[in-house]
Image (cartoon, rainbow, N blue to C red; front, side, top):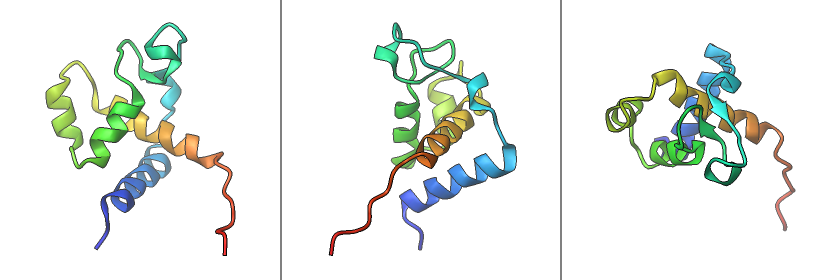
Length: 96
């Protein structure tokens, strides 16, 4: 059985590989908005909030219901942004 993290990671990979979405069309970073955190363009809704909601089990449809001014592609762009952000993560070997 997959945990929520594995499901989220699977969704991120799916979004990145299948849609090849350019998150830059949906996500902006502006020091004057939410202290420079990445947000959905034209809003103050952070990528962090969307990823948090998804990781807690909220579906894309539930997020869209709570935020009717958002589009599905904006939610998917948040996943794509997160995937791209993780690609450059530095990993360290596990201490033994």
